[in-house]
Image (tube, rainbow, N blue to C red; front, side, top):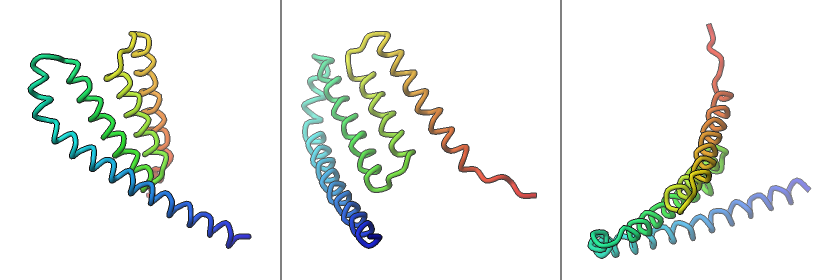
Length: 129
């Protein structure tokens, strides 16, 4: 039974790496696409600020994708919290939100930072004399 569980864990890890490769390919493709459109976007920024919002949204998606890739390659609670912080920040910055939604987003980010600090405080070893 233990051999079956170890075999399944190995298969799951391989599948995670395959998905990570696909995410990496998507990120690289998105970066190339973003760089290709940069000149056109900067010319349009002079006329329309909604173009900047779309550009910023694309960049946030890339950042979240990179953090997600890191989470796939090195799964740990800190990476999960980092992805959640970026997701909430993206929602607050790019989306059209009400003041109450902004307040809830700020509180969410604060809770995530406190949670991350609490998780790291348990990692410290007591000093030996």
